[in-house]
Image 1 (tube, rainbow, N blue to C red):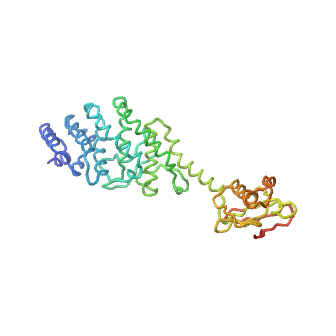
Image 2 (image 1 turned 120 degrees about the horizontal axis):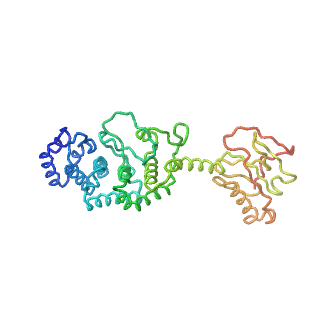
Image 3 (image 1 turned 90 degrees about the vertical axis):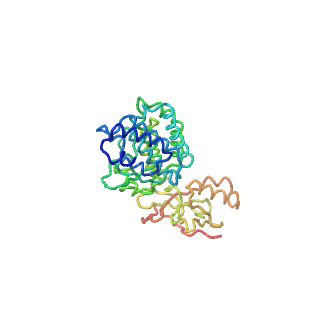
Length: 376
């Protein structure tokens, strides 16, 4: 009967609404079928009066406290109903409003402590049309044109959507109560340093496409975390467009960091006084159009080591040039005592040719180039 009255009818009499309210209060847990009702904001013809709307809101809030075999899915449906009736929340009593905020805070707190557990994508009936993330007044996503009965969403996305909807003059104090949990989640995601593992549409930045399209293209965990980051940022008054750029900046920074590290297949120009070269001045070499460097070419082997005179193969994979220089100095001066300490400052290491790079190497100094250092 609840399903018929709440979903299938176009207008419901006051008497019927009163009977439904009695039934709503009698049921401890309504189950998933109840949440197939129409959205409360689709009430332009006056199908539900305020008492009925408040009764549905109170039952939806109560559902957030219930445990079930599929709590995230149940939460998504309950939150969708509450979001659809957000304009009636100011009419709820203070204890009811506080009960709602407490449930939202609990979920934000849990998500901040264990984000991965709450990053799952859930399905929500397409009739709700509020499962997509919102970011306040900032327009980042475009609507999807796909027609389907179920739409993807996430329980924390809906929690943050509801808080964003409550960020108005009449209910802003409720959002203030949840600010500590919003802040904690924002910082938790920021510390994860989310980056997109591969460029999207040729560049590592969000295009203005739909939510479903992004879910199909990106790692769902990374996508959901980034959405939380933007939503919590919006609630905290941050520049959402600037926050949206952060994964791209981190991605590019990581690319640049890796370019500074030695990899197997790289060829280094190494200068060690009295050893590379043994006599004379080291050659000045130029690979392609790169800046000239001084030293003897030394290739990094597949196991990430280089062979230098009189010492065992030296591991250099994953080190930057300064670290390689320090490792050479430590080996020759401290560990092997082959060089005097005052010679260490003359050791230099530079990139000559990077792994996979096909360029011509020219000797600009005219001196001979020893490419195979003497083995120990």
